[in-house]
Length: 614
Image (cartoon, rainbow, N blue to C red; front, side, top):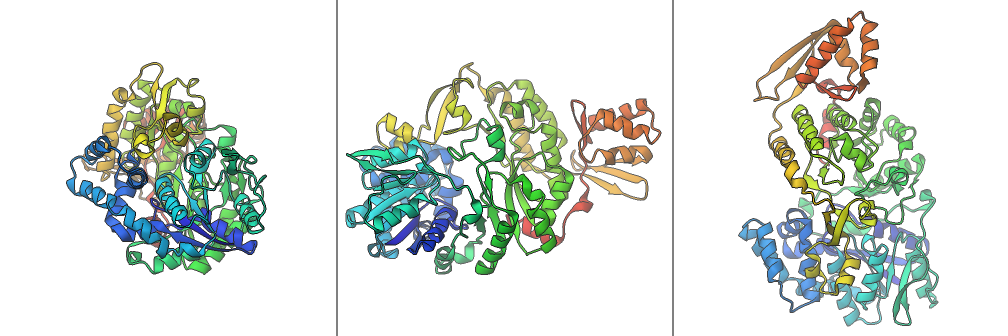
């Protein structure tokens, strides 16, 4: 059995597809030949990189513009006037971008026909599609063309879009799909290939959706990989061959993906209310430190690239004990991106930097502790601010978003947030401030009534992607719209915060830094207001207290620390109050945190340059 696995638009061109690259390696262990074709890269060549990136990065994901392009080919003859009018408004009158979308629409059919020869589909027995987010319609369109042209081919779908009821509905609505692998496919897909190769029925393969008496059926619940160390290294050779032959190669800087864990150890304890990841795979499983280190070294040697993006939902906390010290001491010449929980301390941030973890996506999400409790994040606002400051000090790039619209939040939560933003304008702003999205599998979706969310229905653009009965569209959808049972409109109380965020994003010239001048001299240099410097000299116990608050400290801890140095309690209280009022220190309840940045902690210039490339 020869197997072809396809990665269709729209996904990043700078990253190989880790899921099917892992499946290729699994199939090789079973003795099966497998090739991976990058329809995403081919389509970008076909329509031009500017057009591809317009769909991928610049049009709102809520428009599903990439899916819509291929949906028109799959479901011709429908009236798209409402969709096009909405798209034009979303593009805010940008006629050039709108024209690019219309031009791409006319190229879908020729592109799909060209895929048959470009990827030599005729020579394969099984054709598999990986589909996540906006890959569904491109995959469905090419799959139908393959089945029409080569009826004998076996067509298989897998990926995040096939989880649970979504996979069943895909199989039910699109008869040219022979099988769907729902959930983790490391075992199910190779088992299916072995069954087909030996002409045995695939009944009983865990997580496999097939037809029985004309109905779509799940043969057995999906299984999970329990021992992550037994997985092979993903085989990225097809990606680099395709990229090397592409005219777009000079404009694409690739990074390697690595998977060191699955599931979410925090979500297993306290599932964040807005998170729809890990629909049936929340249980946390991680590779051993020795295995991760060895894989990093092997993959770097194979592909000549030392930039790695971990696809984990959250980094294993055990890695602070074993993997990160191993990377720090052995220095294999790799740099990494990880998603982390945001309640880290200075020594942990320093270890991350020294280990080569130069880019992070921390789960900040809010600057209000009350809102963070509502979303079950397990962190506080002052901890989030501490992380933002420490990452800047150690030269670690971070990406985070500010979310709002959580049932139970109050206008005062965002008045507090606005005050906090005013004090931390010298730190990294959020990439965006947006209302929560209702994702399938999230607690907000599964327990919508409990959370006060009503009138749940798929995003309004879905019917223009899937012209199917409403029930089928609801089963295929991953994103949903909603209203609040109490009738609230978060935009009314969010406006001051949104204004501050836009200003924060627009102007990042001001700063607040520490400048040491001698054994006991510290000056806080503040240029956050109009760029004009204001200097705050601190000496003796004042300097010691401020440095003591380099990490979050309680009022009682500060009092004990100051008393041991002979400071009067009244003067300490007055000093802290002045610092907070001058926005040199953040106070939350009885906790305090210094906000001035110690620029002496930054890594080497080479580390800073590498961090800037993530």
